[in-house]
Amino acid sequence: NLSSNKLKEIDPAAFAQLPELREV
Image 1 (cartoon, rainbow, N blue to C red):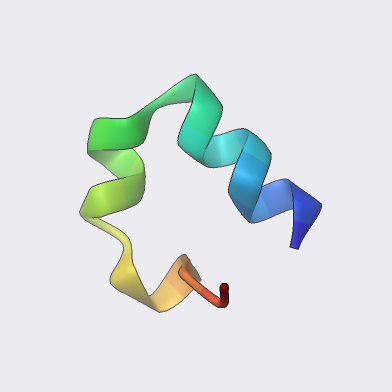
Image 2: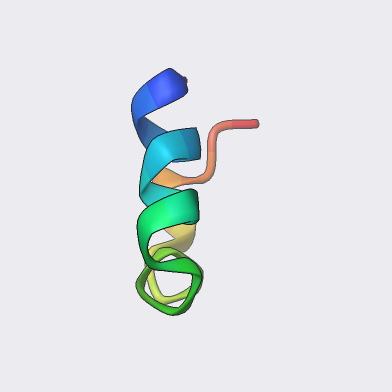
């Protein structure tokens, strides 16, 4: 998802805390 990818760019730390968001 582009949203998930963009989230990763914004805050990789927060993205890492949300493994459920990782759909790649």
